[in-house]
Length: 506
Ligand SMILES: Nc1ncnc2c1ncn2[C@@H]1O[C@H](COP(=O)(O)OP(=O)(O)OP(=O)(O)O)[C@@H](O)[C@H]1O
Ligand SMILES: [Mg+2]
Image (tube, rainbow, N blue to C red; front, side, top):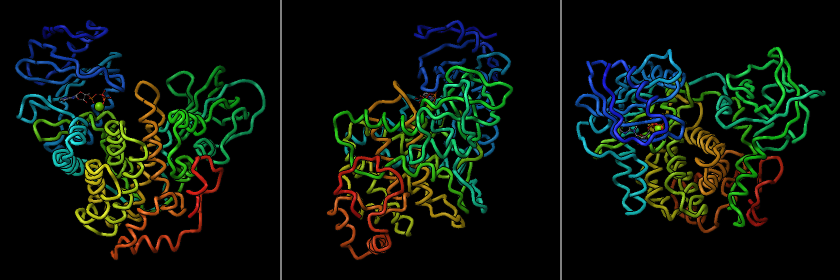
């Protein structure tokens, strides 16, 4: 067994770490492992440390066997057979018999052959925002996505039959909180739970008595799992995996709305479409010709690591064979917005998202990235962010198969809406009020294009004039869309988003 030297690592349980690491089955004989530094306590709970194994730097991730086994198997099944130079390999693991386990990644510095300090792409974007030069971050994003597309998104299939995005609902947080107990409730179907907990009209009222049919009981006590939803259970027990009755004490949509409002404090909410009305429709709508593909699953700006200028992908914890094809791109976009643009005024991010939305229409109409950029960048003050996020979107479009039955731009906005909602479930310390505001701005802007109303109804008229005055394809498209939009159309339901009356007109 190798000798393990923990050095002076400040971690809560060093002996446990040493014991787990001794169990790693190295592909080569190893006599000595020296810990260099803690990379992260891990948002998701893993402990990640850099270690010198023999003469080579490695990155060791310690977590529960259940979690890491999934990560290793996803790597082996999805990544390894197609891996290219972008993908950092998992080089060793422990067994999975014990409660804790480890997976060992190649260290990006060593793997790339560049050595030295590495940086996550989040830092490169932050630096670009400071210096005003987007070249480095756009180059890194374009390169890593080109690599990722080959491994994940190009392996796509078009689902001809109508299908929905409802499986994404479980990622948005528990649908309901229910206090289980005696009494009579209305029997609710699985679909009803999804439909009536997203913050739209017709949601469950707090205090309603509901009865669930047979449910699966999850491994975590106090959680019921139905098809594409979870219910947090307070008190009571489920008997015989059977029916359960209880009083609704929390509904995700209403709770999240409240948290967003609180995040603004006394500041006015920016005017945009309601991020919640219509969410359940986006989840449940059955549409033909959607595109599914492999996905990295957690393409956040800390999972792209650069050695010099060479970007690499790490962290296959959520890698999957089956996801909405655009979901990785949208996850990277919302990650950039939340983690780097947090000190921007939400209204500036709102304008950025609108500029990107129109630019995406331009891309979808076949305009090239440079002309779309020249045309739409004047709509936003955040030019560097615009160019970076447009690079992501152009990559997403680039792998969208021509035989898809849905337009790329619509699928992108749907996945972006869901990505933004996925981040709204988080609580402190991962969640901050500034980041929550930005998530709701991104969701609200996406919804402007998805709720069937006039997408420009909240726009500054000067911006709209700027777009329409040009005599080009984009201007023509906008004029047609404006002509066809139902006057003042809004989604059905309560006007919960506080926009001023002026902004409600078409
Ligand atoms: N192979 C590697 N080479 C260099 N640095 C790495 C490597 N793997 C991880 N890191 C660094 O450690 C951080 C956390 O690693 P990882 O993403 O695998 O863990 P995590 O539990 O998912 O953490 P988080 O929730 O913060 O993403 C990365 O963001 C990166 O800065
Ligand atoms: Mg990570």
